[in-house]
Image (tube, rainbow, N blue to C red):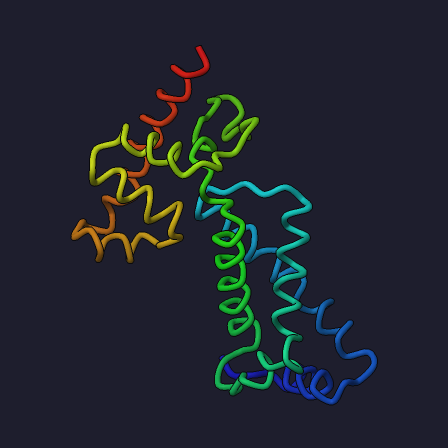
Amino acid sequence: MPLTDSDRSLIERCLARDSRAWRDFVDRFLGLVVHVINHTCHARSVRLGSADVEDMIAEVFLTIVNEDFQVLRRFRGDACLSAYLTVIARRVVVREMLKRRVTASLTDFIEDPSQGLEPTEERISDRDEVQRLLSRLNGSEADVVRMYHLEGKNYGQISAAMGLPENSVGPTLSRARAKLRRVGEAVRH
């Protein structure tokens, strides 16, 4: 879908530093950014607190305004603006997740069946502890968990790297999580 006239005008107003343009831009795309954050985190089985979501929202919009709206200046207009911003927001969110090492907390996989994922008291900050937990998994399971949760790769990338069918990545992650839950339960008891 091509760029709409209203979005083209909004971009032009932002680049011209119209006094109301940025507020209109944020009002128009805030819901989209929040959706991308929630969807990206859900797809990677990461739970964020409201403060983390607010930080990610700010980081996405900061990326857009950085270097005199470079993101908007690079937009060629051959697609709709919301699709372009979805890609930008997703990249920022994944980068922030990796930077903050949110995905490094393997103990977030310890589940209470009645409550879904439960946050743990402490995040794993010691790389040796992460390696110890991963050593409880067989080689391919550990590799899949490492690629998905620590490196932020998607199923397609993992499939290509591991030589596995893409539809077997999800079940492999599920088996690995179940093993990690059992390890976590044994440690707690």
